[in-house]
Length: 226
Image 1 (cartoon, helix red, strand yellow):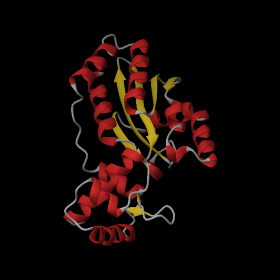
Image 2: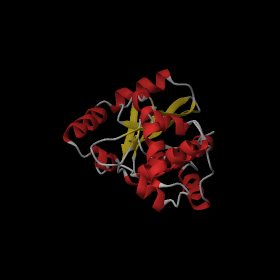
Image 3: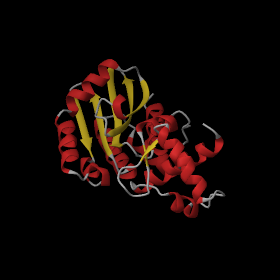
Image 4: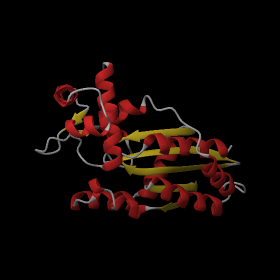
C-alpha cells in the first residue's frame, strides 16, 4: 500500500473509531485538513474498497473499515505508557493483587474504555462488568446483533475457560473471524500467572474500538501483575 492510501485508510479508521458512522471523502478532507482533493480521496477509497479494506454499508457516500483494515492497523500499533493519573489508579488497585482490587480495576477499565471488561481470577471464577456499554454502541443496536451479544454473554464463562486453555501467556488482540468471542467484536486480553493461579482479563468491544488505548492499558496492567 502506498503512502497516500495509508494516510487515507488511517484517517478513515480514526474517524470511524470515534463515531461509528460511515466516512465520506469530502468530510474527511475538510475535518482532517488533508492536502488532497475530495475527488482524489474518492479514487483512493475506490481502490481501497477493491482491496477489501473498506466497504460501503448502504447507498450513502460513506465507507467503513473492514476486518482486514483493523488487522492491518493492529500490525502497526505500538503500546504507550498510560498517563500518570491512570498509572496511579492501576497501581492502587493492584497493590494487594487480590480479587477486590481486580474487580475495582475492571470497573475502571470499563469506564475509561467504554467497553465491557471480564476478569477470570482463575479458571471457573469469572467477573465481568460494563455489558451495558456494548448495547450503547450504534452498530450493536439492531435486534439480530443484540441477540448475538446476549448469546456471547450467556457463554462468556465457557469461552473464557476455552481461551485460557488454548492461549499462551501474554497480551493478545483478536478481531472479527479470529475472535473466539464472536466476529462482530474486537477483544484485547492478557493471560497471566500469579503465584500458582492462571488468570485472564480483557476488554471486549465493537470491532472499531480504540485499540491503541485498550492495548496500551492491557499491556501495562499485565506487566504490573508480574
